[in-house]
Length: 113
Image 1 (tube, rainbow, N blue to C red):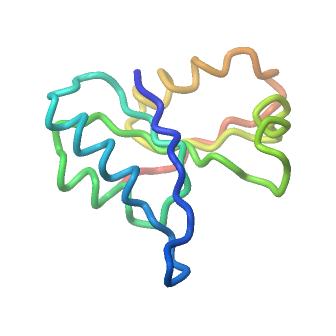
Image 2: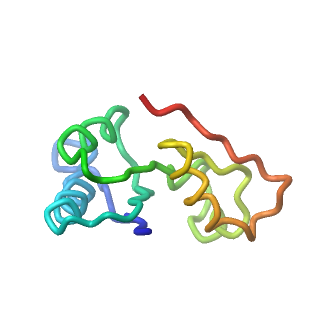
Image 3: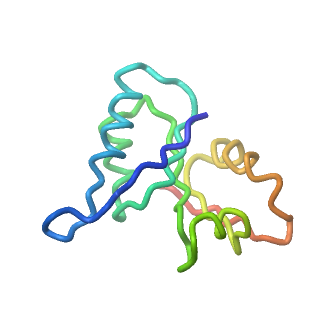
């Protein structure tokens, strides 16, 4: 399993620059990576669909990085929920990395088209 956690800062025209995420996914596809790819970086809606269409051999799941306005380290250490989308089996595999999070914290599985 690979977690893609790269910056998606605003570009000069103030739009979200997702080129780092796209470049990593392209490289993984080019190298014929066959494990699960969990994207944690901030993305525009529909970006995962575009990556999936361009690289259908990749097993992709999306787990948004920041779900509340807090420090990233604090959020990771004390999440109030975990959100994920992807294939059912892949979501369960990715969520297994968060077994240390108490069961009382909701795991929200979103439908993926």
